[in-house]
Image (cartoon, rainbow, N blue to C red; front, top):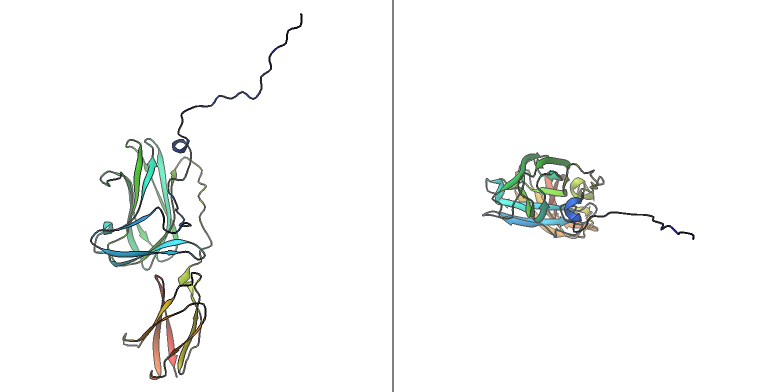
Length: 265
């Protein structure tokens, strides 16, 4: 009698009831590159005044304009909640930032009430785009509702944030940093006639199609005129009542400002 032996192939043993999100190398921060506007983040002001703006043209990032930052960093915070951190793991916090002038900020991870700190570090942010990072050990119990805090108050210096990330340090980083920053303030006045005689002529480039505020000052710092104009088209501002001499042209698009020297002849 011929006996047929069973055949086996592709045998696997897989765990069940595992939380794959907790065990893998997933990015912990949602919308860290601000591709989905300012969603998943909150701007908190504690006895201070600030507002923010989403740069949606070219490279996307968050700009925070502080009008009353008081003297304490935590008075103005950019926060994301609901982050999972596991006990016994080391995490790396990464972000890219730029300030109008050198600015000290304070980054921390904590529990939801923000009374237990898990990891923190202060940074001096430069006035050009730069990457920053720090690592910390999660020694507390696993927390599925952590918060990430960017404490950016303390003064009125504006700041921009992008590429915000938290990953396990022992995982290969797959976070895509955007190296093609289209910095609006690099030179968003694409052309202007200088010297001028009767009209100030200029054209302002803005991929978001936002209006610009144009102001003219004399050499004593006194504002001579201000006007809201449309971007991405040739503009003429009447200035035939100005005396001959040197003037300062200030152009504001969103939170970005740039100044130019003009000569009337």
